[in-house]
Image (cartoon, rainbow, N blue to C red; front, side):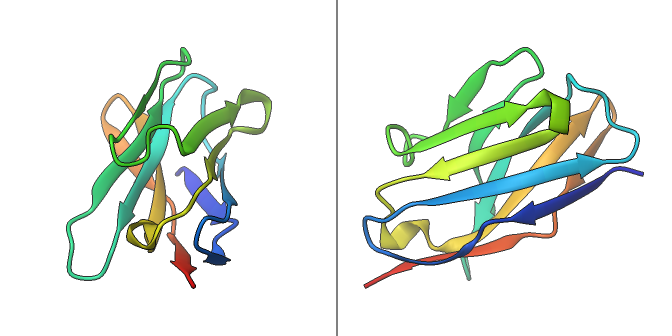
Length: 115
């Protein structure tokens, strides 16, 4: 079974930055698609960013120009660099890893942007 362990969340000032990490272990190949969702209280989970095994990247419109997703294939780790944080970025962030027939999820990490 694949395990995803997230880290890097926390409390940050408005306009500040955080970098989230998601490390995969287990039966993982280096070209899996990975990415990030987030969920705020009372709201549906929304897709934030994706990065395919071939390096294709997509972002939600709400984070374009502020967030950057990247990966280190040697470490089976995906990152989310979050800059210019806004109150609406406050949420629990979940990473995922896709295989052809299953999606694996991280445990979630809280990001809070406040004054």
